[in-house]
Amino acid sequence: MALRYLAVHSKRPLRCDQRVEIEGQTGLRWIGTAGPADIFVSAPDDCIFLPGMGGFIVGHLFEKDGAFNRVTNADPSSVSSLAEPRIPTLLNKFWGGYVAFLTSPDAQDLMVLRDPSGLLPCYYVDQGDAVAFSSDIETLATAGYLDAAVDWDGLGYHLFSQDLRTTQTALKGVRDILPGFQAHFSSKVVVNCAWSPWNHVTPLPNLPDPAAQLEETIDGCVRAWASAFTNILAPVSGGLDSSIIAASLARQTTPWICLNMATDESEGDERYYARILAGAFGHRLSEAFHTLSDVDITRSGSIHLPRPHAYAFGQSEEMFTRRLMTRNGIDATFTGHGGDNIFCFLQSATPLVDRYLVEGAGIGAWQTLNDICTLTGASLFEVMGMGFGRLVRFDPSYDWEGDTSFLTAGAYSATRLSHPWLKAPKGALPGKAVHIAALLRIQSSLESASRLDTGPLIAPFLSQPIVELCLSIPTWKWCEGGINRAVARRAFRDRLPAELIGRRWKGGPNSFCLDVLAAHHQAFKSFLLDGLLVKHEVLDASALNKLYDRHDVIGPPHHLRIGALAEAEAWARHWDK
Image 1 (cartoon, rainbow, N blue to C red):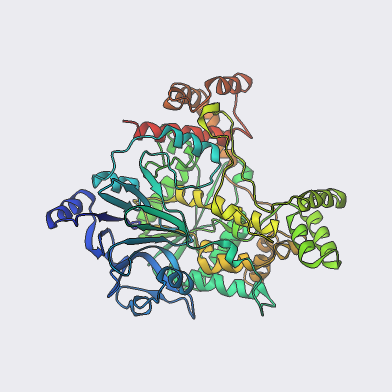
Image 2: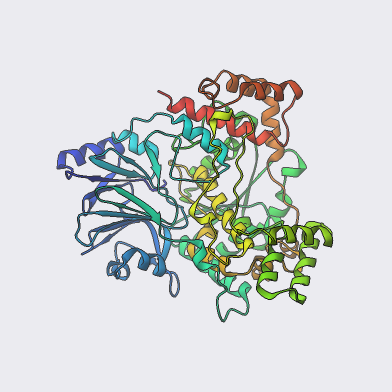
């Protein structure tokens, strides 16, 4: 099961009978206090008590130096003597998927840090006399700290923001501590950025071969994560990212099995490549087809989250995966999720701009120009024109665009979407701003993929050592030779079949998404038009009617948007009281 926790920071410490009541309501176990906060968890072994510090680290923690050894409650000595300031020391010397609850030096205030990977959520509710933090919304509600109600303004903003996470959620009173952020709770709540990707964009000295360093770092992080589990599921497609995860798992001692989900259409049938991958490591491959009967468009897949973020299309894979994990005693899923983002898969001229700004108009810039033309299929003049247009922009910061489709004008704010990571410091390279924006995009997908009743979803590529290393590699090195994710391909070219390393085309379940929309064409329309999103003036009914009047079958580019709106409707019906 996924790790669940609850931390309650009260002006008046909880009494013994209150702790017992919370244990009975939530199924969690009280393990102690972090200064003024009581800590409850589902798995005490996944918590590290810091003696003498009045603190706990909930989740998985590994050392940065050496072999990335796991830190456990049985031997917390390496982390129990963190030097002041403790949060920067924690971020510099350790990594993992955790939330740290630390007390101030006078033991009166509480400091909460969510690690940069974002693999363990941290939502909180401030009731004035008590602040409650949790891994999930259901725990906050069952413990009595949340009388959940939909924040319709927050829901509209979420549907507009296109996956840009902010502290705001779509439930009233629920806030989110973002990955890499810390919160200080005393007389008032102060939240700020503790870890910034901009601190890691400078190329590392003495790194002649970034591919070799990337291979070593990925292997080390996968080995560390694998040490925390007994049986692992690895979904594979034969694409680069999932293949790299499989190649690293093949060198570990923890048992693992791989799974490929296919569609009836050739576009979504990647079993040929998945079989090549499994055969390369002599491994068993489980295969299954997406099934329409597993899909219920009125059922939300994200009711445990404070924002809707899932698709009915994904229910088929979710159902099969759940059965497979139960049957095989699997306690974690390792995914290649985030590979495109971390490995700087850019289809733009920004790597050319970066190289020009660093090296000038030399042979290197011309080489990168040719690389981008090969990668994108654009002409020299097109790439040079795009590069010049980006170069003359004064601010290298990334502009995040919202999605207004099918939303009413009042459902979203006209103000610029923002996040501290999107604001580039003086002298920053625009390609790095795009790379960092890609890191933000992956956060919402990881949140949506989390489940409470199965083992955790581990995305090793989001491990802090991998992210920091990839940020330090110049953007133009990622497209060398006109190949996307070039550094990652070189890192594993001797360990993966050439047919996979050289693969450029990538399939997916898009055809199944279209099948679901076709099979439930009128049901989607009625579900949305007769629903809460229209009632609360989030969804523009006239725009949706026009879409259905024009199309007998909803296809690209609207199919994913309709799926997202249907999920939002199902989620809202669950929480609307």
